[in-house]
Image 1 (tube, one colour):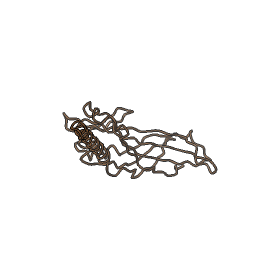
Image 2 (cartoon, rainbow, N blue to C red):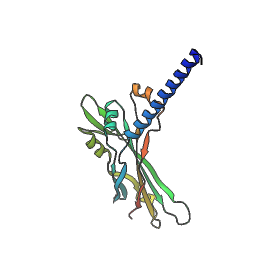
Image 3 (tube, one colour):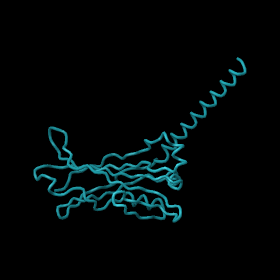
Image 4 (cartoon, rainbow, N blue to C red):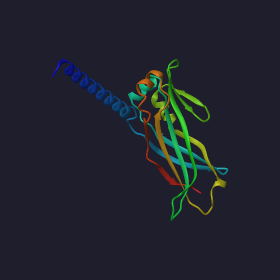
Length: 197
């Protein structure tokens, strides 16, 4: 083997090893950042004045990787998918309502606090710890999802709720490094029950 071929073989091996190590690191980061429990712990509907309001508690993963990502300028998006469907015996259920409640979690460096913001209303609150912020992120209280005229007295309905978390905005430096990992996302199992009438 000539010196040129030997050098080329070494460089190819080095590049292959570096690429494999980088992909392994990305896989570990993607797996670890969202590692932990993601589940809808409880959910129910209250009815008042013909308006059906959702109450739910979601547990989101909490770990040092999430804390570091937020401190580095990343934003986490938390989605709560809500579906109300009319049950049918011999066919697929008919969807009546399908909505997504979206909130975002970020870290404000100047105030040294975690910020939870409702994307639709723009209302935001800040918290001193990540644990408190995640608890607030997972607390859904009195969100109207349906009104009485949308329902039929003869039909039965099923409510399903699923939580999801994904990476939102990235700072420019991290965007250049992680441009290939746009599918960074986790979702819980569906939590379903019959709609009270």
